[in-house]
Image (cartoon, rainbow, N blue to C red; front, top):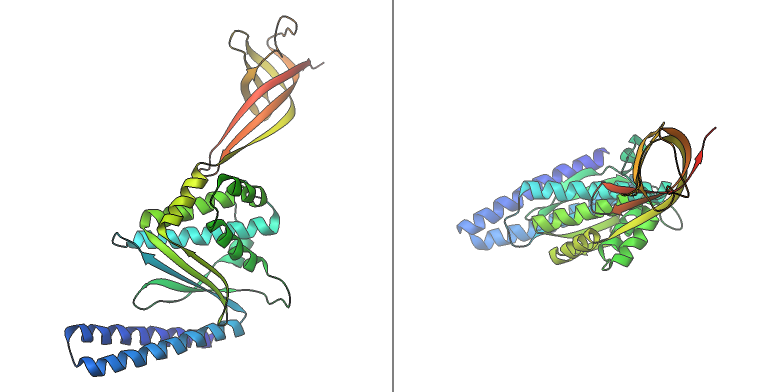
Length: 308
């Protein structure tokens, strides 16, 4: 690790020297010699970048180069930190879904956070961006879960229809799509395009290049996409309300109260007593809007059987 720290310091010092030389060049101090000096420093910086990537690979780390390109409005610190923060969250949530199965909600445990939290390598000179590092196992064949996570994010970034969004939601769960929505929203609102490269040594394994219109399109498509999960449940509880004209019922169970509708489960042909304990067969419909955390749940009472 000391080698990486040494290279980080050299990159920082070289970047500062480049900025100083460029400032003098703007002020008009000996432009010819400064031009040669800037070119020399740029060459040195590129060599240090290659050395850093090589040293990271020797220590079992991959490198994620994340460059943000402002389009239009003045870039802000809040916009920068939000874009990077939602990318980190998206990466961790997708990783967990690929390893453990589709996730309806994002609940990241300590192990997942440890395995997916990026370390800061260094920042780019003269532009907005960071180089991140992450330990990653080496396989002779195939890809690791971390490789699969960044590849999946790259694929999500290219989706252009609700049908495609729904397909990935089935594979990963709503939590990953919700995280992708937040990532796209923060880039779109901050007017940052993104150029992301996942490297092992000098080899680019995965690339993500998205401009602001693409982020806006992804945000819009996810915001317009939803799904319904329908299941039949059997519960026991105390029937305390039945409004026949409004076709509404109220059932109190050990797990909580259930309020919903019925069609003919309660009628002249199917009378009930209040209050009384029943076994209720209910159709539960959960509406999931991928852009938000909240879910809407509705209940349709199908039948009642008295409990003895």
